[in-house]
Length: 359
Image (cartoon, rainbow, N blue to C red; front, side, top):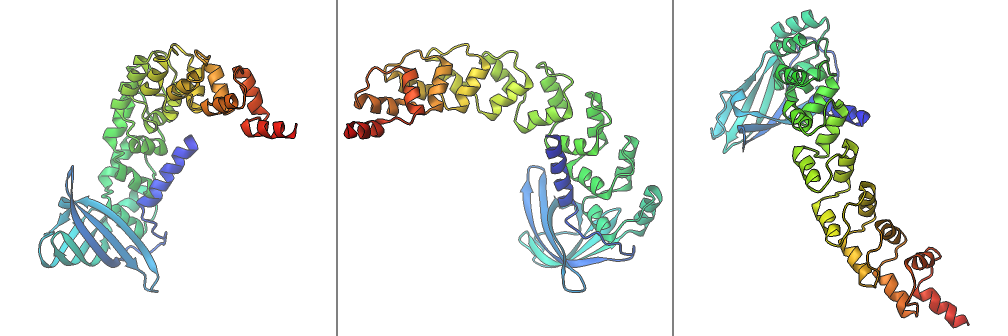
């Protein structure tokens, strides 16, 4: 699980930097290319989706990326200009100037990114390392500022890679989020864990929600597993209402993964299968021993078959159809064990007919 989460975080970070090549250009270098944009409404207000394409001097594609930002982040933008226009994205790390045509919320044109020398100097002085133009461009797009970097440092996260800074900015891993987790008892977490928790919405509210149901001091991996598989307060209460009051986290995960829900349990209960051990229910669900299958077996004259025997029947494909075929072949009074034994030895109506034909 932990390796999978770390892999998820690494993939996210790779996307965050747009797949830019890690060249080491001089600070005065700029990035130019083509852009296409479309405005759209979201729950947080109007946003602009941009697609940028930059081609190097040798004619080879340098990068192609798409992202969206709040419309208010852009200065001088009129999405309904209906004519040539110029607008910009101004950040501490640099500025991107867009020129082209914008009409009816859509636009195309060319862009030019210029790094901020002051930011380069401040970053190099604080971090004791150089920064590439490509990294500066990504930091500009996602507004990675010295204030943000210093905020993370205050919480003990210093000497972070640019990829980590960008990823944390994209997903909202800031001082407020880190502080809220610390108050919930989760302090000094790795960047990978912080990223994964933010991505999967494992926050202070969720932690309190599951702790109030008895799940305290869980590991980060366990909290992530609960969120990924939708094990929340509501689901825990539903399990309790079905009679499962003291299930472990692993059992709750098993319920969710195998879809052991109210419909499945109540269907069996209506047929008299109440207070079954949890492991029996899991086995029945895995092998599709549900209310429909029980009725199918009862229609053949087998009532109140033990749960483990029903599962065994399902495993060996002893269903209503097979029982009926054996009856039509002249075997009307076979027990369940006998039917299972015949099935194991691949004895069905056709094989019996063949045997009789040879006599």
